[in-house]
Length: 303
Image 1 (tube, one colour):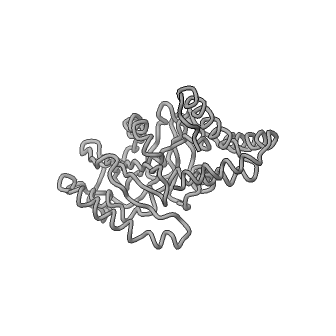
Image 2 (tube, one colour):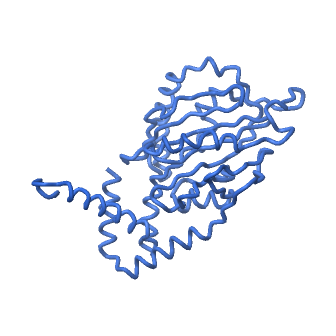
Image 3 (cartoon, one colour):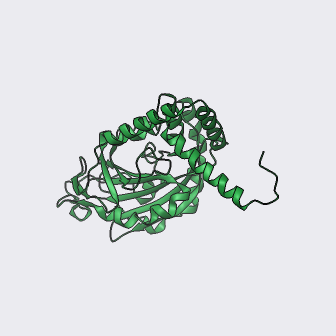
């Protein structure tokens, strides 16, 4: 399992790390975190004719910084469509428990929702699982881990009144035992859609869900850009319907970021003086071992 190998490699690295190196690593992680320019309040989104009112409990990163976090810090493939991120204010991007919502915009046109009530999402699930398997060899050829679509972590739902679509996928990257959660939100507008994706682990699903409504309500199209402002005489109609958005073929590059790749990046940073995450990881492990020892009686020590 990748997770167990990461732990093993982390322990090996830490065994050769003295206190001065650990302190230097902490300074490096702090330096990276402090270099990020978080924003709060009302922010004009750079694409799509909307603004975002930063939800309570979150901070906003602009497109440039978001792409830096996703690719340089977390080790994901580059994606130029990302225009922002919402990061929980109680965690930084280099903490082991960190997660975030990414924000992208696609000016695909006006998405008709006539098919929303007729979609068989069970059949769609099977189709997508097969497509993932078919596309994995090319992904591996490009140097990335294969992805398995385990199933719906949250069944697709379309709110016809609010013109919002959301669903969640449980994904497995490579051989990792800790599955990735991709909670997908689509906010429909006159000329395109906002794609808001939660990048987290499946274990954080309940935490992510508690923020969905606040995040959805934070994006507001300006007058003239709302779904209701559609003018069939001058506006383009998207080639994709609601079912197409969930299938996501046109958006294949969007929404498949993984937090688990971040752990490999953190180990690489440790080698050049950024091992704060290692210290935190091992501290948590040590506390668990103490707790185990306090509760154990005549059991043999673990091998």
